[in-house]
Length: 320
Image 1 (cartoon, rainbow, N blue to C red):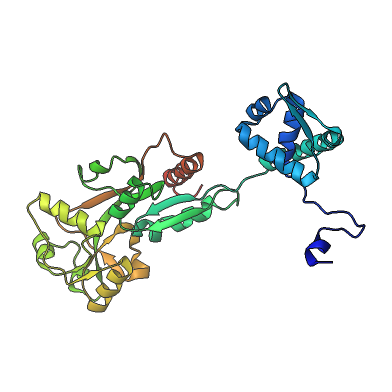
Image 2 (cartoon, one colour):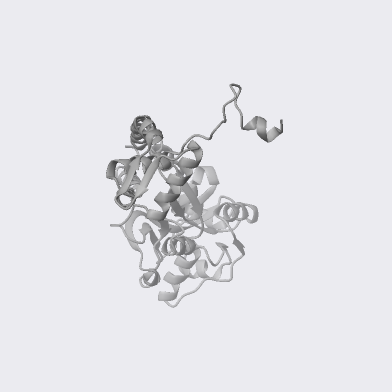
């Protein structure tokens, strides 16, 4: 006996068959119940050729004809009449399983969040810990970029929500994003304790403008905010002492070179950083961070809940 022959014969000498598929049994029972293939196809929302294909597959698996077809419709054969009650019971069980699966808790899609470097490092970590503390909220898929890139990601649909620094009036109008205020910030001057400016209560404006200092790179919003404010007053900074790619590098270089540095107030912890804020006469570089999205009204419920959560915590002092 060939190997194929042995696979086709059970231990009791009967031919083995594959189990019927649920879709095939549904097609068979619908045909018996409704009496025509056309009505059965309509009830199952499939084409009649697709229905006929399922019936042929079921009859092939059974090894016998299950339906007699005529111009008046279809009726079950003797084999079909034996199959029908068993098929109907199996379909009822399948329906129960489907309802259980449909009612089971589903894993929610992650919240696609893009944030600026300052927000990622100095604002977001405790907010995410609090947000996911109960273990029932969806995960957050985080992307970190500069504020301009964050806005582009949201505008292009690569993130559903963004947190970015708001640009000067008119700068961000082309992206058609909707905004919600989140928090206020200020770009401040900070100096190490061994720098001469540490002994000053305020830094004269001309001295500030003519002294090379540590700056962030040209794409950083901290840098752009300062340059935009100065440009409105017909002023400009001296060439930078060094351009730093990140806030951490800017702080390190300020300490290493004993030089002044411009930083977000959110990022400055004087005791930890050993850098000390000093106001500049006649200059303030205020800015704000906003939540951005393409449409507040069309945000998914999980996204709206996340936005509401972080804004509410901010309004309540991040302690609720």
